Length: 169
Image (cartoon, rainbow, N blue to C red; front, top):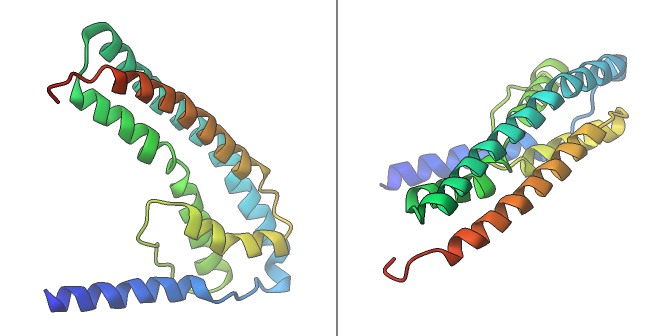
């Protein structure tokens, strides 16, 4: 058990150090970096929005089934997972791809994905590069707004479903 804890601590600290120090993109690659990153964002944006919409359709299905057929704990848990885990991390693959390209192609650093399902560490890592290279991140911000809008909808569903929980649960 101690070995496992030590190994985890070493791996965790190594991942943190990969994101800790800012190393700028070389000036001669700055324009190429801007074009490539914005192209990836533009390509992935509609895919992520569609993926979120599909998750919301799935959530609607669970919600409607619960409303029509009565409380079901499995569907309730699935609905909660969509609202709390799945939709908030729908864009994590995009952020991971952007971080990997930034590190491996432009900084010549081996990429190690952070051990999280949150985009926050990746956003924190990428934001100075976006700022320094004038990356248009408006679509990334729009994804976050869209996620939050859909999460609020699912939270309304969850409130109604929680009111339906039988007393014997």
